[in-house]
Amino acid sequence: MDERAAAIAHLLLRVGVLDPDDPDHQQVRQDLIADSALLASVREKLGAVGWDLQQFLGHWGVRVDRGVESAAVGLPRTGDLQAHHLRMLIWLWVQLVYRQIESARREEEPDALPGRSQRALDFGDGPDPRDETPSVVFDEVMAEFGQQYSERGVKGMLSVLRRHRFVRQDGATGPVRAGPALFVLVDPMRMEEHVVGMARRGAGPLATGVQDGPEAG
Image (cartoon, rainbow, N blue to C red; front, side):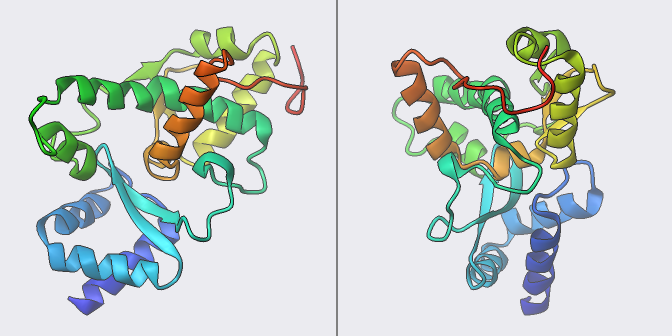
């Protein structure tokens, strides 16, 4: 089992998130769900190098441990993820992930501790996360960002998010769906606090500011 745990830990460190369309990755997911000792061993190995194993809405991956995490609201910081990408990422998280969280909470029985829906959030015991996947049409994205950025700029921002597997999209103008990284690499608790805090201040799902991204429209 130790070799299997080490192999899974190395896989997660290499790919970041398990791909729901990859049979080998989904076998890893099933093994982690079925074997609590294997799960604990993988967590221990990842924790030893400063990473947390995360599972959320049926998606699995690794995120930098909170003790060493420096990014605001749990968002990753890489060379090509700039402020305008993060604003789009926050907006898409609200549309594609937060709505699923709220839906699961509404379905939760009042006396459930923690209840079936919560277990589905934690371990993906509910329906296949690829079924009835929420999406946002490209026109909605343009309606939200088109006053700040040109269509070319919006497509470029989505291209960067696709490359990091935050979103999935068939073609440059196809519907935008959540990628595994949007579930795993973004800290849902900190993100929700951030989004709710902005809503209370009347800022909405985005904190708009000076132009700092691709060409403005």
